View (cartoon, rainbow, N blue to C red):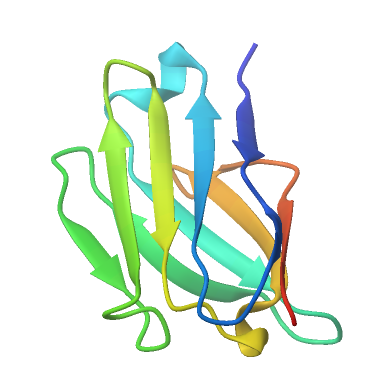
Amino acid sequence: QVQVTESGGGLVQPGGSLRLSCEASQTIYRDNIFDWYRQAPGQELEWVAGITAGGTSRYADSAKGRFTISRDNTKNTVYLQMNSLRPEDTAVYYCNCAMKFWGQGTQVTVSS
């Protein structure tokens, strides 16, 4: 069964850090690209970062310098390390595999 599962969200103060994880089924993990998206209340889905099977990463302007996407091929897992978090980063974060498979999302709330 194909699955993409996010974890690691939570409540953090401004300036804090979180690391999101996206674990995928082995059948889809190895040769595919992964992207992180987010959706804030009342707003459209926003692309945040992406990583290729070979490890090349790209970032939205809002994430550059603060977020880092990486993958651990031994764990079939993609990570999003988020530092210097701001209230405007508050959203549900979704992982996408191969522009096709979506996770259920994980809530990130940045608030004092």
